[in-house]
Length: 348
Image 1: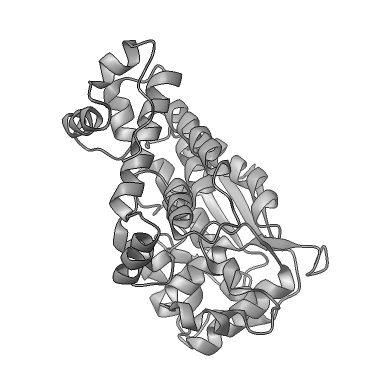
Image 2: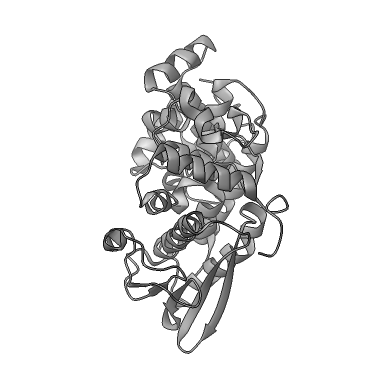
């Protein structure tokens, strides 16, 4: 352990993902937080609370009481794809090659998940990515954290490669768990147990593999724009409209639908619709407003082609994007870009 549990932290986002994996509803959220002293609000989208290491450990222990599935750590880790949490997702999409993505993750983790640490070294034909837990934890909870950490790293690597990672090797410091037979369902490379340290060994030949996700510069600029807009939405707002907007801004456009947004807010789709209606809003209206705003900003502030902007906003067909844009602003994207006094952003 390199620091006390109270000095180390992890953002509340990961406990939200755990709550969703447990299929909790609003009335059940406090069970996950029992004994932490945290308000239920920390599990709602948009919250940026930093949990202490001790609080995160208690949440994991509570989760294991709620759901005693032995492989819960694997189930949770499988949800930690780059597209499920904005910063790491955009990190992967904006890295030019594999080694840069892994090194960026190493540098990024202390800002978001200080309870873990990634070491990156290259030797003997391998890129050795060491997984370290920076606090004391009981064996079961430490194993769960390492499983999540390893699957997060696998997901990042695979997003760069554009395919399953099959030629690597995972080594874990803990003994083989009773459920080890299900590991191949989660890890795409061989796994070993009772090793000296926990690490992912990547063939060094993969280091300069180009990012398969597309144009890194485009995703980097898209990430920055979403961050700017996200900062304009009050983090502590109790408005359901603001929470939906923050949630949509925190993931790549087009990667969420109304059903998944409702689940992330721990309510049913019907409840979400009812609460938004009480605020004079609706899911489609919020989504359209946001897409219109992002489209306008890209056209004004970047040199991206209309096709590239359509792809960044989740449109698989640029013709559909053009039709939507004309509905929002009454003119084509090209005409909008060429117009010095562009119309104001649509309000629905």
